[in-house]
Each structure stands twice: as structure tokens, then as C-alpha cells.
Image (cartoon, rainbow, N blue to C red; front, top):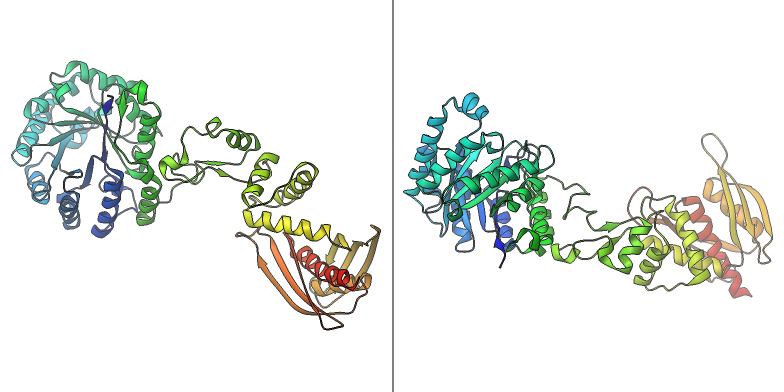
Amino acid sequence: MTRKINIFDTTLRDGEQSPGASMNTEEKLVIARQLLRLNVDVIEAGFPISSPGDFESVRRIAELAGEDATVAGLTRAIEKDIDVAADALKYAKRPRIHTGIGVSPSHMRDKLRITEDQCIERAVHAVSYAKKYVSDVQFYAEDAGRSDYDFLVKVIQAVVDAGATVVNIPDTTGYSLPEEFGQRIKYLMDNVRGIENVTVSVHCHNDLGMATALAMAGVKNGATQVECTVNGLGERAGNTAMEEVVMAIRMHEAELDAHTDINTREFIKASRLVSSITGMNVQANKAIVGANAFAHSSGIHQDGVLKKRDTYEIIDPADVGAGSSQIVLTARSGHAALKHRLEELGYEFEGEQLDQVYEAFLNLADKKKEVYDEDLESLVNERDREESALYTLESVQISCGFPLTPTATLTLANPEGEPITVCAYGTGPVDAVYKAVNQIIKVDNDLTEFSVQSVTRGIDALGEVTVRVKAGNGEVYTGRGADGDIIVSSTKAYLNALNRLLSEKR
């Protein structure tokens, strides 16, 4: 059996310290329920003495969690802080007081203005005092990442002897390199008596973009708890992202001799919930939960994924609640990706037919950043309309503006394939085009309806035009046309209606 790595979630405490991410009690309860669905081991619900709201949040989350998770309240190494935290946690089934003090030269000298001996004395007193209230006491050695190795051993040894059940080794400023941080954890494991009887925790910040790597180095060298947040939310550049470290442990379970009990299929839901409540958007290329995490737009990648998913995906999207891989159709997509998406939509093309559709797709993709399903539907329908057309559009050019007279120069291919070019004036660009069409296709008709709608979202969406024309005998014919250019769409729609009229007359 591999080592169990406890997941200590601090989204509601350290995550809330992210500027602009503050949450009220009700919002914290909503997130706490999702954390319980994730099956986290510990929820750090807040810093009870910091405000009445934080106190109430810790109290209510402690009641909510019951036996399902340990609930922790943060304190400084001050008796009053510990008293208040104990009061907030008094109804918790599994309470933990998380107390500590700065241990780096910078923190002791510049912030606390104490000696090393005074630091150890305060640390021991805080742990001993908290033990009067709860059996589960976690000690944090703030800024351990910049502390002296041997002094850190002295502090941790002292609090272990005082009864701490968990020792938290934070890289508070995200300063360390992963290899060095791993060595620090190993040094503690090798030099603190009885450390094998307590939980060793790591709490890493992302100031240099290495929070997950630091946490993984800690796990590799003996840590059995990782402190993290949903989406990597937190002070400054954030904390270790829960979804990243959990999936990294899962991917390397054998070599790390480690596992977690997290329900990973709740990750996407948790990510979106936290993002919605805090207003902190998740970047598209964020690992595991970003919009692009399982999206493929390169033709080479798409071909590989379609043949066998794990050629370019080490994680099954369903394992994190992301559904399935996304094949994003762009100008870089190949025949395989287009064929796959068309088949999903119910269309089957092979050989020359597929080549023709692909050419039309590339022309469209060159005009748009991304081609959506609705675009493909419209593209295929447009192809079918052109295949059955008597007259087809070869080119159209408009000249208009204030105070110019709208002018259309139009070239159509007739049923024999011969090009015919005309020029016409109108009250507007569409009117000019339709008059030009009528010069070539001499059939009695009256335009009764003209409407435009976008096929997909965005400013570069295809515009689909629907027209209805009434023939001399009173019959009404509908035509549709779609293109990125509204004039081209309008022309195709009118031609389609007239082609249907002509086909029935024949």
C-alpha cells in the first residue's frame, strides 16, 4: 500500500487572502460543501480572531463537516488567538488548531524582533497551550524555506516534543528551488527524533511559478500532507494548486510511493465554483482546469489524439470532470480532425468530396480564429446548395459610401459554366447586387422577406441570410446563403431562391 498524502485545503483561508477574492460566510459554506465532495482531508476554514465573519465561517463549517473532514482554524502563537480558535471549533467533530511563528532570520529579526531562543519558547508555548483545547495541533514554521537548517531542526524538534501532531514546513515566499526544498524536508526527516510519528506538511507559494514543483519535492522526500487551494488561489502569486498536485501524485504514484483519496472528478466543478464566487478567472492554459487543458488545435496533435488519446494526453479528461478531449478546428487542423468532427455531426465524406469540403473549410478557417459546429453545418449546406445550383457566384464587388451611389459588379456562371459579368446601381449595396442578379437571371420575382442572423458567436461569425421571393404565379421560394461577408451571404441566398424557382420551372 502506498503512502497516503493528506490534502489540506486552504482556499477559504489563504485563498481568500488573494486581493479581490474575499468571500462572505454563505459563499464559504457553498465552497466547503464542494470541498467535502472532493473528499479533502482537512479544510482550513479561516483565521477566527481576524474578524467576526471569519469566526462565524469557521464555526459553521466545523458543524457542516462533521466526521467527513478535519476543520482547522489558523492562529498566531498568541494565547488570545488560540482561545478564539478553540471557541470557533468547539462543535467540530474533528477540530485542529493551526498555530505557528516565523522562523527565518528575516522574520525573527525584522518582523518579530526576537532571538532564536525566544522563537523556540513561543513555539513550544503555543503548541502546549493549544493542546489544552484539542488533541490535533498543527505547527507552522513560517518562512521555513529561508530558515537555517539546524535552527529549523531545533524548532521542529521542540514542537514535536511539546505534542504537535502535524508540522508544517512552508516556503512562504516561494523562494526555494524544488531540489533544495526537497533536501530541507529530507534533512528534517533525518534529524528530528520522532518525526515519523507526526504528519509532515508542506505549504508552498507560487512567486517564482514553482509551487506545485516545490510541493512535489516535499512529497518525494517524506512529506505526507500538502497544503493547497482550488485554482492555486492565494496570497500574491498564489499557492500550490490542489488539482495540479493531486493529479501529479496520481500520474507518478508508483515512483512516489504515494496516493491521495481525492475525488478528482469534482475538479472542474470546484474550479468553476471558486472562480464564480471569487471573481478570479482561470487562465485558459491553466493546468488541469483551464479551458484549453484538453483542447487540441494543431493538425499533428489532433491526428494523434484521434488515433489514440494518450499520444498527446496523459490524463483522461473524464477523470477530472472535463468530459472529453476537444478538437478545436482552426486553419492548422488537418483532414483527420475535420472528417472526425463532420462524422460526429452525421456527415460522411471521403476522397475527392472530403478534399472539396476541406478546401472550403480552410477558406473559412483563414477568416476565423475557430470554426464551430454551426459553421460546419452551414458550410456543408452551402456546398449542397451550390452543387444543385443552375447559376453560381464567381465574384461580387461593391462600391458604396457617403455620398457615393451603391454599385455592384457581379460575375455569375450560367448553367453551361460560362461567366457573365454585369454592373448595376441601387439604393443600397444589397439592392445593387440583386439588381445585377436580375440582369443575368431574367425571371419574374418579388423579394418578400430578407433576414440576417449570425451562425455562431463572435465578431467573426458567419452571417446567414434567408430570403423569400414570390414568383409571377404566386409561389414562394426560400433561399439561404452563409459567408463571413454579409454581401456574399446575401447574394448566395438570393441566387439559391432563384435557382429553386428556375429548377421547378424546368
